[in-house]
Length: 297
Ligand code: LMR
Image (cartoon, rainbow, N blue to C red; front, side, top):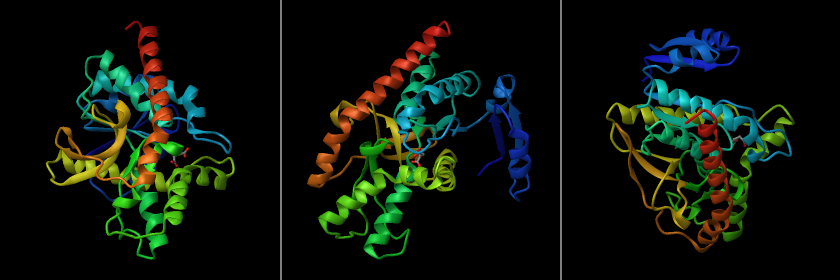
């Protein structure tokens, strides 16, 4: 699906490009390094995937990354506004609950915000939920599908195990333990890596799945549905951004799908996530507005 893969970083891009260029696909790979080459990296892009920034160390929350990653995402969002304002933008950089609202403010200030085209990538939460629930149910991984809604940090990650297809019929205590494990799965990796970063390989797998879905939808493919953290006007508790199932089309989000019937622990989970999600969104939006003001509008 990729004709041109343009890589951008502040350092080390040519090595990654040389490595990727040896893969036998038709994709042309180019390397771009530093501010002066951001425009060349973004020009003509249909999909921009942003994994930039620093990862967590043990003991850190995703929000502890805010001070470093917020400015990086703001700069890249400004690049998108200038050089490829029609592109779909998929943000992986943490804290996703705040970095997506930051990007939205930058795009709004530039007059190019299209809520159908901005995504926080939460696919790894779905991948983990599918893996853990299948394991607990004793079925093959990949045989179970379920939505994960809310956001992408701790209790804001809400797997809807009651909607698993096929139905898994697990005891309530198992469902509670699985929910907690899915919510803490990023921390499980951070702890296991013991200071050497956070999930990279499962994240790459999840991001590739999400990016591929975007490209299939952009090319007119039908029936593409993914969970993603997106702007919405009808989310629970009025949250302006919420992870949910969306169907994708050639212009980005074609429709946000209803949450569907929730179990009573899931309703409690929704209540529990509302405060933290709202605070993370406000923090990101305020940073974005201040960043725009500092750049002189
Ligand atoms: C993850 O979910 O693995 C990523 O968001 C990285 C992290 O810090 O947990």
